[in-house]
Image (cartoon, rainbow over all chains, first blue to last red; front, top):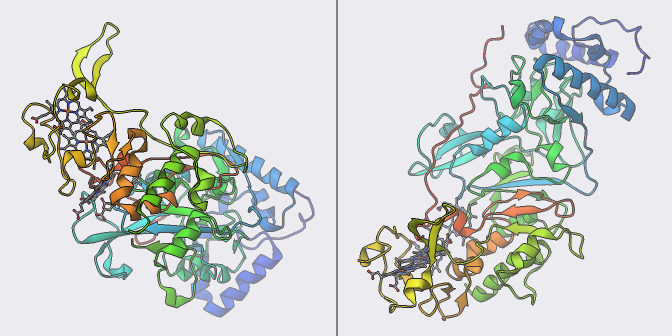
Length: 313
Length: 209
């Protein structure tokens, strides 16, 4: 870390930067003091977990490669200390000329949940709460209204007269979750993936409220994963273990996909319902699907422009 | 289904050379079971792409005799061992039609006769409706004859799934084939029991403590 700012003073536990603090004040002013207090409540409880280095960590997007390397080392040794697992954290950059797209064939998906399970393991989700970025709704035939779906079904699938709708972050081209973030801890990368800097996130949860698809998850507790189950193949902006009080969401497995590999949920799908690829490559599988299937997106009327599409054969 | 046989040709092609030709359409390349190992082992062709490995059968299925050899391996016999000795039954449509052998075979696949797919002139192979012989390794051509839509989707990566790399310039890919997911005699995809349920922390947050 550079040593340019030990002179700063901090008034809130996780606010390590003047611009961030100002942002928080501005937000507080517009939504009222009570709401502001509620919004930072999760933070107040985290006080003693936050290290000085975290305070000092600049906005991740602005860091130099050397500064990033220092942060990765720190996070790796923290993981070693807290979880007893040796991990390697890297930060694969977006591939130039790539914009990711995803499609799910709802005629084939049978709601077996292997995708959600693969996500759970790949992304080092909290074991006790069975956290996953994917939520599957069992839907009565003939509706796309999520309110009519149930994500808690527990029986042999597929059930008669039902279809299954896996919902995860749609990596919207026009993401409402990004603009509401008061501290720019979440943003869209050039390959379309909306990422979160977990150490920069102040946990105010505005993004969670702004997402019309309930695709964001909040870490109420420090995730617990046994050492031998931790996936050591980690990305800074993806599946490294998130701190308590941070927001998280599907990141299209960017630590895999930015190296050319398929997302974990796609590989795990036993029905072959998932199609992934580069929207900018006219020869790609995803482009073939867009050109040849009648694809649709959820809540199109909101203008979010998802890049995860659905289709029926 | 106007491009029926064309579709089948494409399928054969992926069986052989995988990725590059697939999206672009068919080429002249001739298929064959022996080419599979080649497709799987060589790394990146002239276009700089890695291969797509298909889980093709290496040869015709064999029938277990229930005996074991001196190395305790199951003794199996080929289909022709018996079928070269007896006349084909052209009307059999299910295990129930068979009295002497294969009675346990569950058959729920349209109203097809056994010999819609099995080749009465050579039980070590399959055949198309026009009599063209098809090796077991090219079984996807057989399926594609009657299911051109799914076969075409498969060729374009939109049916049947995959593992490995979305970007074939960076690494290879593996794919299951039709009969990995669909038993040719009872092809409906099996029902499954969900093994994992994510508990919804957004809808029912835990109280932090």
